[in-house]
Amino acid sequence: MSTAAFPASPGPSPVFVTTAYGGPEHQKLSHREIPAPRPGEIGIEVRAAGVNPADAKRREGLFGTSGPLPLAMGLEASGVVTAVGEGVEGFAPGDAVLGSPARGLGAFAAHTVLRAADTVPKPETLPFAEAATLPVAGTTAYDLLHQLPLAKGAAVLVLGAGGGVGRMVLQLAEVRGLRALGIASEAKRALIEETGAAFVPSGKAAGPAVRALVPEGAAALIDLVGGEPLRDLAPLVADPSGVVSAADASTAEELGGAGRANSGGALAHVTELAAAGRVDPHVLLTFPLDRAAEAMAELEHGHHGGKLVITP
Ligand SMILES: NC(=O)c1ccc[n+]([C@@H]2O[C@H](COP(=O)([O-])OP(=O)(O)OC[C@H]3O[C@@H](n4cnc5c(N)ncnc54)[C@H](OP(=O)(O)O)[C@@H]3O)[C@@H](O)[C@H]2O)c1
Image (cartoon, rainbow, N blue to C red):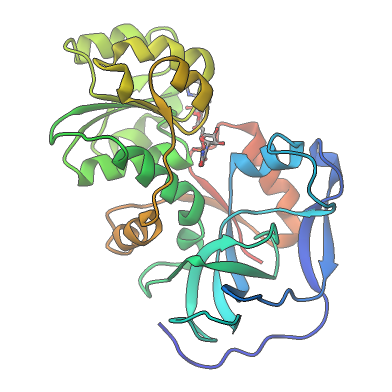
């Protein structure tokens, strides 16, 4: 970690926002004063920001429409500390870090503010782009896999295995010595098999294919898709409490399972594994901040095989 002083550049700072809740037509590049950290917060110059389905859901108002507009977009970032708020210990200007923006200040921006409690140092071996995919996608993968008591060798089905979260679930399953089966479209076969998991093509034939591979029933189904594909595969889990979903908690609960249980330590653990090369977020495309709308369009297309990252 570098400790060299890092000067904050003065003046308006670009930020990608939505001016209304709804479709992508409301998104635009805007400017604001560099946000200052409050107590318990860390100001950063953003080096990279991960793009997630939650960015589109938030813009569309699926998480509520009462927040002030314009709404700064982006939920995970890596960058270099420019200022620390009162009471923050262990971070100093010049440190490379990754974490989650505070107060809805967004990550698709040249500067933002992170919650110190959800921020960790960026290991030198981990590039900024990869680091920026861990506060949301990486921690979700870690939590989903660790909220269940799974014995070594247990069979774990991963639905949506070729996506940003799913592929990290497969890699983490390999670290835990589990037997992972990745369910995804044919185009994702290589991405799945590279992790050491078995590939199962998604669609109506997925159920019979899984049943043939795991006739005794799987120990867990980790779902990143929801809806009908989740309902179709849930009966293949021996005990319904082994169904966990980041995409559709209500259907998982209805089936006897659960949504994601957020744990405190996931970011530190998954960052350590990524730095050691055991988890590779697979950054597929990077976009400069003035092309953030293209990154969102690519995300909303829905079938990219890897993480999309904005690099201001
Ligand atoms: N609760 C949380 O804290 C939390 C955090 C992160 C993510 N999430 C949610 O988790 C989900 C996945 O996130 P992500 O970042 O991994 O998204 P992503 O990168 O867009 O991946 C989603 C994957 O779903 C697959 N898929 C889509 N329709 C499918 C179907 N009918 N059958 C099988 N696979 C299908 C796609 O693969 P193919 O092209 O192979 O079909 C795609 O790879 C999203 O709903 C996201 O909002 C929740």
